[in-house]
Amino acid sequence: MSAASRGVHLHIGIFGRRGVGKSSLLAALTKQPASMVSPDPGPTAEPVEQPMELSPLGPVLFVDTAGIDDIAALGAARVAATTAVLDRTDVAVLVLSDEGLGGLELGLLDAFEQRRIPVLPVLNQVDPAKPADATLDRLLHRGLKPVVASLPSGMPEIREALVGLAPDDFLNSPTLLSDLVPPGECAVLVVPGDAPTGPAMLPRAQVIRDLLEHDAYAVVVKERDLGPALARLARKPALVVTDSQAFLRVAGDTPPDVPMTAFSMLFARQKGDVLAFALGALAIDGLRPGDRIALAEACSHHPVGEDVGRGRIPRWLGEYVGGPLEVEQVLGRDFVDDPRRFQLVIHCGSCMLDRREVLRRIFACQRADVPITNYGMAVAYSLGIFERALAPFPSALAAYRHAAALRQKRRRPG
Image 1 (cartoon, rainbow, N blue to C red):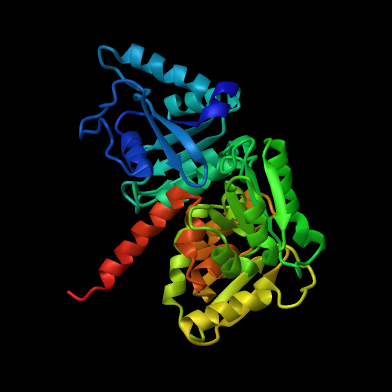
Image 2 (image 1 turned 180 degrees about the vertical axis):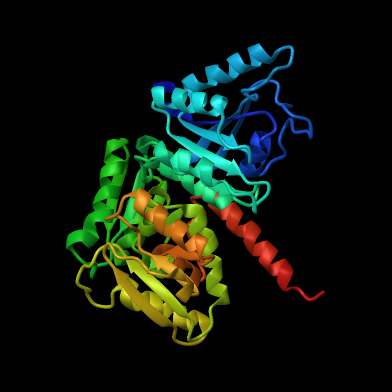
């Protein structure tokens, strides 16, 4: 894989015979009309590039290639252009029809293997009743895990598989907030006086290190000292970051024109999927007293005072919905065995987990059609300051507002 593509976008090449649904797959992934789709085989004349943000991978470049079996007058040139895409492909998607694997597909698989390109075979099962056992066996024999789906309904499985194949340097963002706090600017970090020590201090340490490594400043204060600290600064900070348990007081003491969020919301972006968590928070409006929620906490520190995850979040949510909820705690490396038992899953900031593990948990909930959000988002939502806390992440805020508007529209009579 080229260093250039690594530094800009993840390049995802879409390969296959003419007419197997490559352009339709691209249209479904990007949620945009395919640029050249027709009922006739082989409409894509040359590689078509489509840049986009693909949550949770970030910026990607999809490359839709011409059919590898193109026999038209310019077929040889088109096949050559498709082959050239291999040299700048980070992840390959091989679209297969009901016809299964042939010599052309096997040749492509060999080319991927020679270049060490991870590949996702997608069986576009137009006829769900038609068995694909022989094709599946041949792919599994090569160590490949295919997705069998009818396009475009199989998008969740395809998206999850792409995340699993993405190289680590694309998946694991090295920054927590350096894009929010430019070099030479300041972030004020608010830590409650009764904050626990040990592993629970890790998020603050990681945030401070990220700021220093990117030549920004960090000012650390207790929540009661935020107002005086802001008054002493020569200019407004680029960002205020707080522990979730101090959210309401910090929101009141932070001027409206100063961005504010929580440590766990920063980690929601770095370690998970801030968009999925933001949309998951909408489910809080649908909770009723007695509903079951799961609180997943990656570390198992001893609670100090009224712990935010094991005490304050259940209390605040109970006050928001008008009665106590049935809460199940899940600690450490364990996760809920069956998300369908819950109306909502709320995850900690995940500073003790890597991103793949957090995404696996998110995908498990999405497969079960159970919303999942994160500690900071749940607290901000229950306290009525959600949009304020989400504002530093404009794409997530826009998606949340759109989803909230659609929900409100569905609730209107008539």
